[in-house]
Length: 233
Image 1 (tube, rainbow, N blue to C red):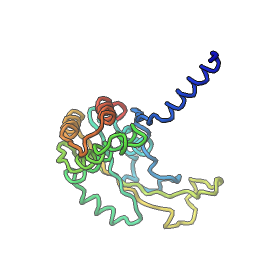
Image 2 (cartoon, one colour; image 1 turned 60 degrees about the horizontal axis):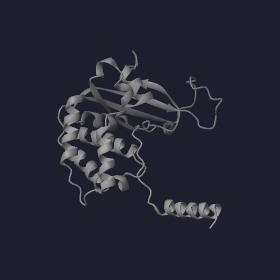
Image 3 (cartoon, rainbow, N blue to C red; image 1 turned 30 degrees about the vertical axis):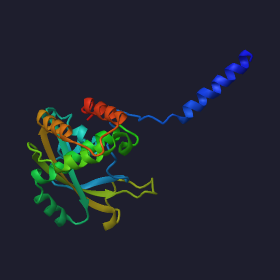
Image 4 (cartoon, rainbow, N blue to C red; image 1 turned 180 degrees about the vertical axis):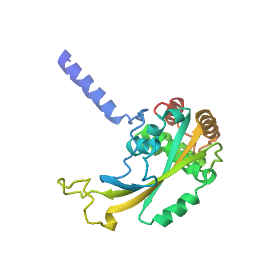
């Protein structure tokens, strides 16, 4: 067998081996940007403090999400969680705000952000973490989180801009009012000290006993995210 033929055979064997080898989990430990809260452009036509200005934390959250709020000097030692609710019934939103309870509602906010951290680090989290992923979401939602406190609340009234009319002037208040083009968004700001959140999170992670147990590759993927959890959190 000449050298060219031998190289061709070896190449075919290697190619066949690569095709038969199962794909390994792909982890991206950089947390993706928070999902856009509204797909449409809007202007703020009213807000809770119309005689004054919009609080800095609100402006930061509208533009950057929770991570933006945490850049504010007064919150740098805390994790910030903003709970939002949007609709066309102002009174119903007021009742939602008035009935909000950090003890009851914070676990869902924490679980959502923890889930986003794990899902953002993997292409197929259910496969790459196995039963651990579902158990994590359930455990973090059911946990008795302590130390979260409601710092402030605010509301804004939005007017959505026409989607197909780029010539429309967003500052022209003479546009005919359309109830479907307007809504109120209520925001509640909660904070929790970073060490307190961290200790409770790792207690939850360490207590999870998924069934079935994760494979070796899944265990490695889980440990990798645990070790780098707060990088970009």
